[in-house]
Length: 93
Image 1 (cartoon, rainbow, N blue to C red):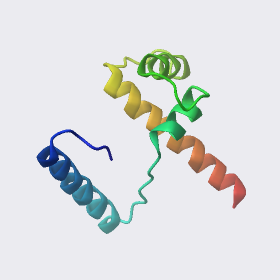
Image 2 (cartoon, one colour):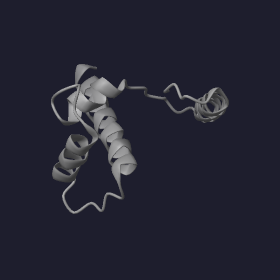
Image 3 (tube, rainbow, N blue to C red):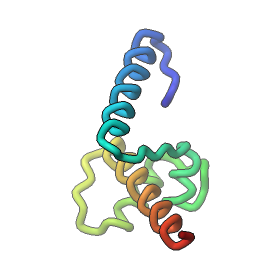
Image 4 (cartoon, rainbow, N blue to C red):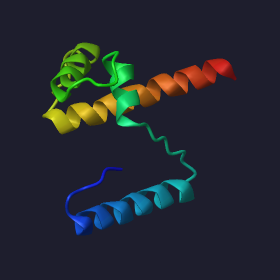
């Protein structure tokens, strides 16, 4: 979740986030949440990486993927982080 300069947009995003989490919970799905710094550290190696660095590393980790811009790279970076956390959790069980 991020804070926007426009309070109405922030409220709407919060409501949308709540609905998505509720639907996932009703469907029996676990929801993972990761701080931006954690995602950057997992993908790039440093928590203060810039968007261009995240995009470059996602491109390296997923060769051949057609990444349609920085938002898509960010989403894929979160997915990569989640996959790593799931794999670690599985090994610990």
